[in-house]
Image (cartoon, rainbow over all chains, first blue to last red):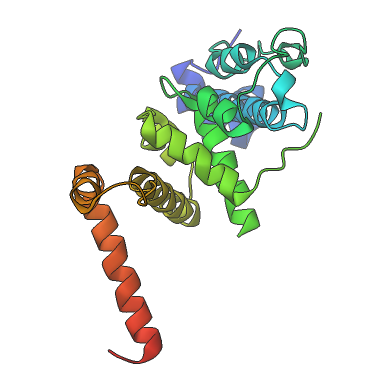
Length: 130
Length: 102
């Protein structure tokens, strides 16, 4: 079986394409890496969106900040569950932390793709309001 | 899920907290690299506003019960003195321009 990393496939792609050979449709390593990168960025964006929605929701005082941070620090691809954000009133019912502090807290620590996306989302919201 | 509804003031406040806590994300490529030109300019604008707010908070105190010496000592003690002076100078120039003095 031919693979995308096979030099013959990548090297002879143009010829294969001209001949209508199936190897012309195989992705190169670069294309696979690019697709993986795109997917990771999109996942990070979706995670950031969920985090922001959860942290700034009207009942945000019920959101467990530790879970929000866990979501933003999550490193595995696609393994994030929205359930992590299920409002847990009992867990932090006495929380008096403001929405701003909660969101900021989720952005502290080492920079990650999710945190970058969340910060970007804040800037977009600021621009929308301007 | 409820849609996020933040005000500009809240977003600025978030940046203030991040600046005060030296959050690496503000200057990190994982954030800045995602922004286009306009978004980068907007980010700089938010950070300028946040820095100004932080600076003014350090000199926001009751002046009724303190004497002149204490007042100037507190003003000079702020680590944001330069920023406050620059902002004050810029505000004065703007006002002078508005009044047609310069």
